Image 1 (cartoon, rainbow, N blue to C red):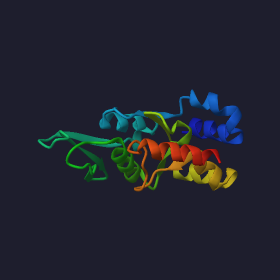
Image 2: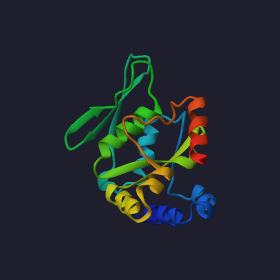
Image 3: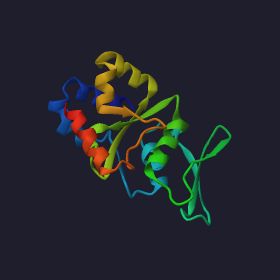
Image 4: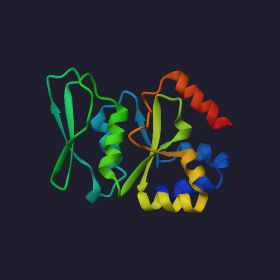
Length: 170
């Protein structure tokens, strides 16, 4: 985790100079719009200490989506709340974020906006707060948007993507 923090800090010191290097760094969790949802959980587990790995269970069902995914922690088993028709990356990411809170935060690396593969960073919440204190909330959230229940990432239509990209240029 300290490597992730150091890479993000280096990026925030000079985003324009560090953008290309950061884009290719190993601290980004890349999620493609067609990744299997259980794979996304495994991607984040690769960045978590062993004792904090997300435990989950994948159960096939007769619904059009074909599966349910249950996240498990401290004796609690909670289904990711997909709609009846399909699983989706946004719902999976929000459920993972909710399950890891308050200890960890997933943040969307906003320079990946507009692609069908988006990048995310995972840090302990205290580390995000430390970065916000040092570099300012506005700057940190401009590049690394917190994920909330209102977040739309993969389900954004193209007009919304272009509008957000245009707004970020201003």
